[in-house]
Image (tube, rainbow, N blue to C red; front, side):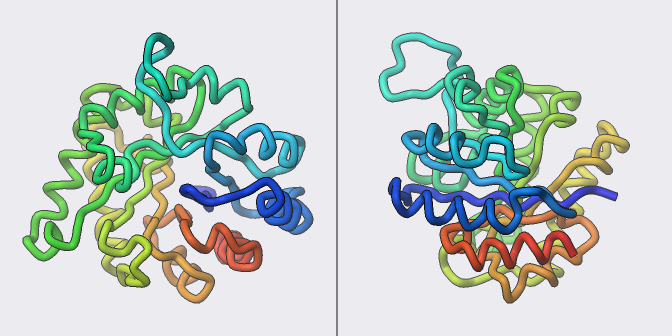
Length: 251
């Protein structure tokens, strides 16, 4: 049975005092671990603080993006080796906001996925469709293109060290949530597509749901056969909410 994972995405939120309060609360409750894995993906400036507060606990940490380049004249970019210096286990790759706001193409996302794996981290590859694409009945086509770009660039073996997050763009920060059945259908589609190349790996792969997961709906979502946890946005900034979601994943 696949172990559940709950990963918090702080996005561009945080501050030293606020972060400390949140992380100390998480450590106090789940610092020794449980029946599900928990992680937080924080803004670059707070990686040092997060490392200091979470070191030696069962809570992992990571970043929200990275450069596809190892080093060089790329002002403002952060490489995989830099993230590794701060003990990052995870890094988000291809989040919908990176794709829509910063123009990251499927090919660019694939290059970042490769860089993350080569840097020894676990990429959380984000896939998902917009409301227009869903209503146009091309959601699976869009997700297949996003996924295929990575499998072609990286190869299936790299997915042994990866996580996928399905994030319907129309359900991020809108308060709307895909029904558990809608989410399950897409998760199953993703797993089946990967199984064409490596069925055993596809069975082991964690696929998270990311789209307005809340304490009230987490247990039902996580109860679906192919949903292995969540990529959590707003609720990850509230200790009680994030803990409740982690508890739902732990069963």
